[in-house]
Length: 95
Image (cartoon, rainbow, N blue to C red; front, side, top):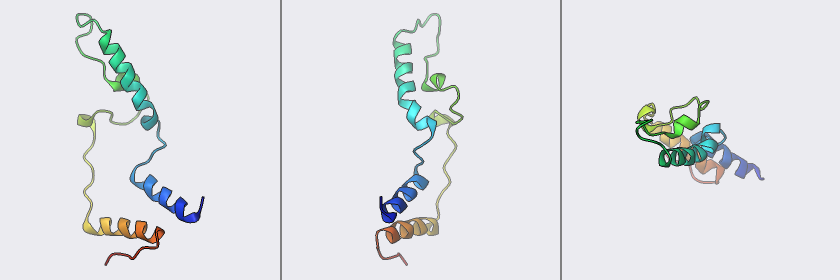
């Protein structure tokens, strides 16, 4: 892997971390919740299962309504990130 490619991966990781347990376990938890809901007795359990029921140690907000609002980015923040990406691709920085 070249230094340029490594820098690109670093920038991608800063934007969207991809090594946390949540990312890898969520698809399985979604399948588990679907199977559990298909086989659920609505009289015994009125509330449907959610993926968070199958991720007891996730430590993050799992549902959209539980998620914290994202920070808003200023124009300078966006420009700084774009310049960092452009510099790894031998591009011209923005003014």
